[in-house]
Image 1 (cartoon, one colour):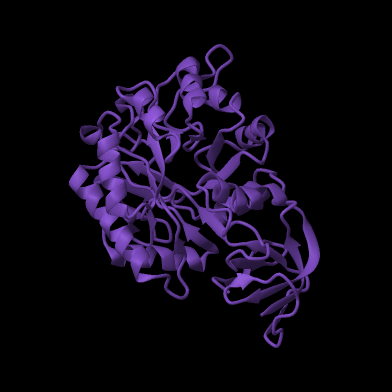
Image 2: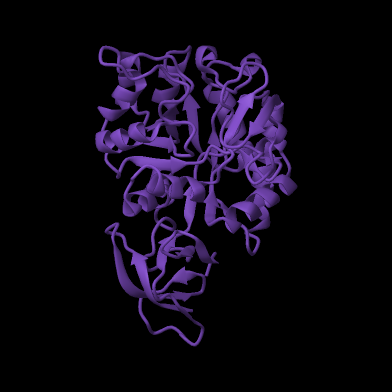
Length: 374
């Protein structure tokens, strides 16, 4: 396949008019492949398929429903909105429930990628090693201390799919967990009341990610910068942002890009099962949620319960409503998340040898075509 004349997002994070060749499901090294199947991309942006490394569900389904059927519906929807690779997140739940989630993911992966579906490239284990003080929409009764054996049991059940594990560094067993697992898994700070010194020590020991920056953590202030300041001061740390227009004010998004630089930012949706669905009553992690417009809130206390916006819409919002340059927003939804979970050898950019996941957008960022696995 050949795509000609498109404005192609390159590995230098710039757009340039170019041609793209695809052979055997991957971007081709040279124009020697058969180009009888040609798409004219004149006037269109060609960007890599988006990669969401933190979301819970959509179209009435939740990853923690723990069924292959739920994953199938989730990946079909995500593909339809230009998210071609997914690393869905778990919630704070009992071990037997999480084990079923992991087993279903392993089975889905074993069955192989279905045409027209996003690829399952990992799992983000958001709970249960978190702080009750900053639990957000997580179920407090299932929170537990960091536990290497507990994690390893779930990793084994998943077939090695877990790419991220979230912890509150101030809690029991956190330091030991980081020391034992830092070379085996990406450790992210999340749902935590840690101060700057505690968070910085965790990053210095080997944690290298921060989950939905600003949310479920102490605020960034001039005398107490907390996890946010510690992450900023740790050049190896990448940070997630929910740019749905609800979770973070546009001015804060712009300031954060200036603080961290666009090479360390990752756009996520953090969507729950109501994404792609009408307003109404839903659940997240077994807790009742009310959805109205862009807001999903717990019935119990009104806390934000994830978003109802997919990653493509978050990227559009970042560009159109928050004044983030398109090049930066695309990188933060493609190559940056790929690097964060270690899949950038095969995903995240339009480069020879990588999996041919590609989206064609018009100048208003509307989807014109979606190509998955060539």
